[in-house]
Length: 193
Ligand SMILES: [Fe+2]
Ligand SMILES: [Fe+2]
Image (cartoon, rainbow, N blue to C red; front, side, top):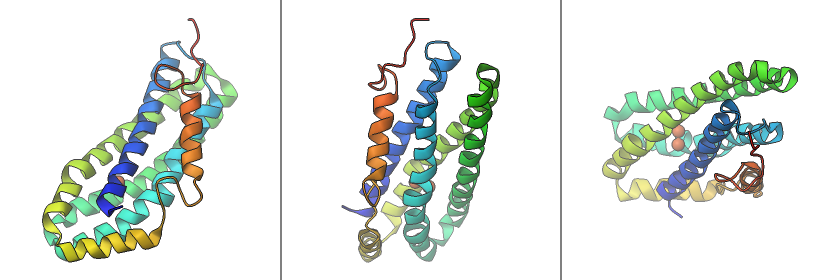
């Protein structure tokens, strides 16, 4: 599989989990779902681990390095995207921190958790969209076949599929899907409120 397809696939999987988080937040806010803390913790684990351990290192270490070398004009965009990567890690830490009082105190602490989660969601969606609409087209257009051969080889050597080195992220993704209430997921978390 080629580097561009791998990045795109990982964006799709991550985007699906972000969508799920938005759906769950809407449901809790509107009183349609009871909060499922195991589900929220699983989503937060996914959006913490997958970008930091699997996705961003490949972008930073292979694609961005080659783009900086070949396409100097793209540096401001790469600077911004790298800053987003660092910021993303801070936001997921904040999200883990905000889940603790929500789980301990209950509904009175939902607003604080929701505000942190919505800010994270908005920043992540903006990041994914910039990569899909600006970064990847610029890479496609500006890098030569020999550059792609190098990047593809580095991705191949990295051997880190979107499922994770031992399939753990696929398992986590499946667990999330089984817990998200229908009709978005297949879980049975909806209340009759
Ligand atoms: Fe990125
Ligand atoms: Fe990305």
